[in-house]
Amino acid sequence: MITDTVVEIIPVIIKYDLVKDKEETFLSMTSLTVSEFDDLRENFEKTLNDRKSKDGGISNNNGGRPSVLNLPQDKLFFILFYLKNYPLQETIGFIFGLSQSRANYWIHFLSGVLKETLETMDLMPKHAPLELLAKLESEGKQDFSVDGTERPINRPKNKEKQKKNYSGRKKTHTVKNIIIVGNDDREIKYLSDTVEGSKHDKKVIDESEVVLPEGSTLFQDTGFQGYNLEGINILQPKKKLKGKELTSEEKESNKLISRVRVVVENVLSGVKRLHIVQSVFRNTKENYDDLVMWLACGLHNFRTYNRIHSY
Image 1 (cartoon, rainbow, N blue to C red):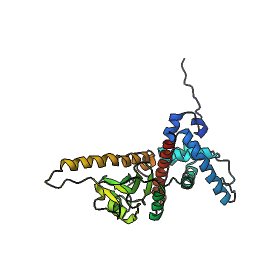
Image 2: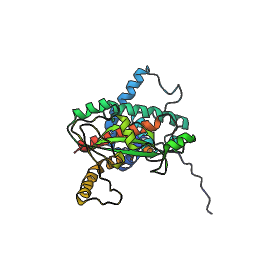
Image 3: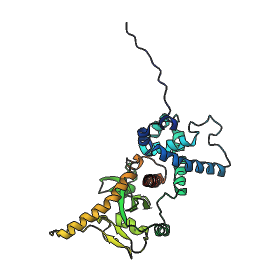
Image 4: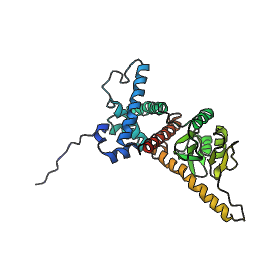
């Protein structure tokens, strides 16, 4: 006689130690290799300790049971897992043995810690024009590319916001950023504010008042038509005029420009390795849509720096 047997399933709480020996799994969960994670963890732990010192060493557990994220490596693993996979807060709470409210707390707290960590490592893109210029002048001479990128968001309830965030190009509601990339080192040098998706790329870059070292070459696409910087060589594909054809020389020039500009497209693919800046953005916390783009760019710079210098 066959009888059904009830098997009790004990949930497994994911932690760093559980996956650190599974290289491919670890990479898919965090966007980093284990060795890259360990390099970042040293600086992340220092930032955590500095914050604890500033807070007078007060625990954030409020006298309750110890957090399952009691180790720095588990905290870092948690926030990288969230950014890379972008699960619902209820889901990530279950995976890590947390309530939804505690998951929400850790997401926003650790996002701030991670941003501060990447800033202390000088891996964040610049935003202020003079800071950008100073950084670029201190580095070796190279060419740059500029491009815009859009991210889908939930349809705003406010009708005015619906109109501002509707992107005719993407046929959905989006937010947008402009980045400037070094063509040689593939580092994101500049990141604009996060703006509504309907705003034109040229208008965003005009308002940024970006300054590049004199004599630099900037590659851009036709979305920046008419954008110029004094003392900067601008290279842009030539548009075909209505009723006319491009010459063979113009077509060849366009091909050469496109071959260079593929760098910025590859960089944006690296940034959007994190699903939080690829999927429809759900979070409602003010300015968090801006913060996660900073984190995605900073983590791209971290990965790029490590992989270039590992050879």
